[in-house]
Structures are given as structure tokens and as C-alpha cells.
Amino acid sequence: MAIRKLFIANRGEIAVRINRAARSLGIATVQAASEADRDMLACRLADEVSVVGPAKASESYLNIPAMMAAITESGADAVHPGYGFLSENPAFVQAVEAASITFVGPGADTIARMGDKATARAEAIAAGVPVVPGSPGRVDGAAEALRLAPEIGYPVMVKASAGGGGRGIRVARDAADLEKQLPLAMAEAGAAFGDNGLYLERYIERARHIEVQVLGDGERTVHLFERECSLQRKRQKVWEEGPSSALAEETRQRLCASAVALAERVGYRGAGTLEYLYDDQTGEFFFIEMNTRIQVEHPVTEAITGIDLVAAQLRIAGGETLWLTQADVIRKGHAIEVRINAEDPARHFMPSPGTITRYEPPATGRFDTFVYEGYKVVPFYDSLLGKLIVHAETRQGALAALEQALGSLSVEGIKTTAPLHRTLLKAPDVVAGNVNTSWLERWMQAAKPA
Image (tube, rainbow, N blue to C red; front, side, top):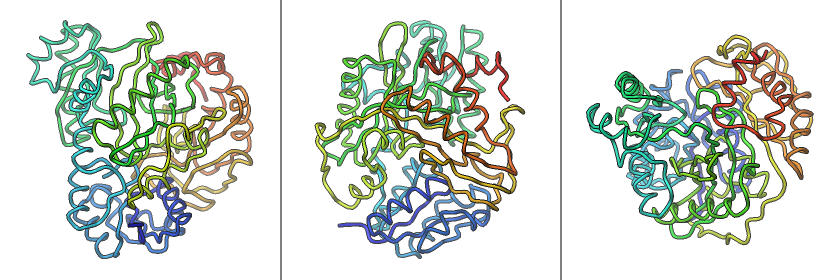
């Protein structure tokens, strides 16, 4: 049964994106907003606005009882969680389903299984998908971690089982370092996710971060090729592109086929992303985790395939079986996405809230944002202002298109990370695609970009 009225349980640019996709399908929208977000662009686009609580996320966007009260009062028959906040919270999904409302995404069981990295790893092994050598599941305290680490091989990564967004991760290079990092990682995981469970994984020194986009209807899955997200700062993705220039075609086919195999094993429904590390030195790839939601990087895939992923989510949630075969998914050209954050790169990326006194969107490319001239950027949430996406026939063409688009983007009144991307475009390694997950931080230390 098609969705009639959609409650958008998120904010920012992804809320704008969902509103527009729903409108393209003739679906009415109700936009959730905290008291601090009444003026964001998504509220102007929605048919209705529901204020769900104070500015503090724990009292609004993360407050399940408040969110459920707003959803039921709105009369919506479906909920789109966006990314972050409650998007991968099984308890929220269960509450939505218990109210006989459609959740746009996989079921609570799938989210619980694939959202826990240790469990997802076990599912990958069962599906025959290669994984990074590591602990078979959660480690039960320091003694077990210290026993397993030499078998895995130092250096090891200590990772939060329920983690995401680069949080709850520590690298230990020997036993003494591991003993020191374990309590720190446990505390960080507990504070960030309400779950202090940890597992261990071998640390690959020259890793590239590759992720595969999938769409499934619970029975059948197709992949929409891969994106590369190796340019990262503090394990937060800064620059994304697709396809990856690191992969040979045969490797690409095996990588994407493995993602389909794992998604079909867990009966995946909706849009999801399987993340991998690719070892530049050996040519091996390893599954690391699955994001059971739409991702910040999804426009890269939309640009190279022509498929509207958010609309696809809504259609699948509305009961449609997957209308695509793998042969229908054709990759064209090269796309790059850069994140424009309200941060000052010249001052250690200090957040830069405030009023946007002048705003000119880029004259070319696609800019997914929720701001406008006169909008006040509030200090309570993630600093992402928007995502600039360009597409061309070749990677070199996409780099040229990005330079042109960045040159015409103007945001005044606050600092943004646009200057960082303008500087990156001049870096020979970036131009050549010769980067890995540790490259950006090394480069920033040496170049000190303004």
C-alpha cells in the first residue's frame, strides 16, 4: 500500500532531501523540528510542522516517547528516519511498528543484527564475505582482549560494537597501549551509543575506505556500485567519490557481489550501505560494517546511476517489489561530493555557528542544503551545512567541475570548510587519486591549510 503521509523524523539537509523526494511521489509530509529548528528550510517545504521538543537532541530528535507522540498525533502512515539520530535505533523501529505505522527502512531485527558490528561480522562470515581479522564477537573485558590481540596481529583497532561516525575507535600498537586504550574506548562508546561493548580488529595501515550501495525488497537485492570515502578527518568522511579509482574491474565485481550476498542473507529491505576496507598493498578487501539507512554520501550514487535512492526507499516501504534487475543498473561517469561544514579549518575546525549574512549557491553542480540567506546556524547539532556534488564523464572532468562549483559558492557570516576543499584540489595526491584513510590528517599536519 503506497504511503500517503510521511513523518520526517530528522533535520537539516536530509530532511529537505526527503521532503522533495516525497513531493515527487505525491506524498504529504510532516516535518519534525526542535524549538531551535523552526526556521530551517525543511519546515518551509513540508505540508505540516511538528515541534517535538527543546533544542537539546536528547529531548527532541533522540526522544522516542516525544517523537512517537508527534507521529501518532500527525496521522502519518509512515516515518522516514533520515540518517543519524534514531535512524538505526531498533527500539524506535519497534515503537513505530507497534503503532501500525510503516518504518522507511529495514525491520528492527535487521537493524539490531547489522547495527552491531560484531554480529554483522558473524553474518558476513556466514555469507562467505571476507572480513578483517579480529575477535569473533564482543570482547569480554581486558583479559580476553589481551589474549586475542597477538593472534589478530598488532596494531589492532579497538572498536565500539554499536558504533558509527568514527566514534568509539582507538588504535593500539602493543599490549601496553591496548591496556591503556580499552577503558578509554569503552567510556567513549558508552557515552556516544549507550552501549560500551567493544571488539578488536586488525589495523590496516594503508587502507582505502570503499562502500557499496544496495537496494533490497527483503527477497532480492541489487548493488548500485561503489563509492570511495578515503579522505577522512578523525574518521569522519570529508570527500566522497564514485567509482573508486583504486579498484580493478574484476575486484569491483567481486566486491559488489559480496555486498549483494550479505544483504540477501539478512533479507535486507530498503537502501543500505556495506562498508569495506581495501588494502592498497595486497589488493584484498574486507567487510567492516553495514549502515542500515540512507547515507550522507548517497548523492554520489544517484549521480552515477541516475536512480533516486530516497524515492526508492519510499516506494519499497510502500510495498513495491524491487523493480530493478542488476542489468538495469548502469554506471555513467564520475561523481564527487564534498561536505561543507560550519567549521573553521584555520582554527582546528572549530564550530562556527551564527547568521548567514550572504548566501549564493554554486552556479553549477548540485548543492543539498537546508540553509538560506538570513538563516541562523545553531550550535546544537552536527555542523554539516550542505553537500556539493558534481558529475562528469571522467574523474578529471569531475575535479574541474568541483573547482568551478566551489569557486561560485558563497557563504558569508560564518566560517565553512569550503577553503579546505579548494586547497585539496591543488594537492597532487588528490588529483592522482593516491590517498588512503590516513592521508588527509598527515597532509593537514604538513600543509596546515587555511
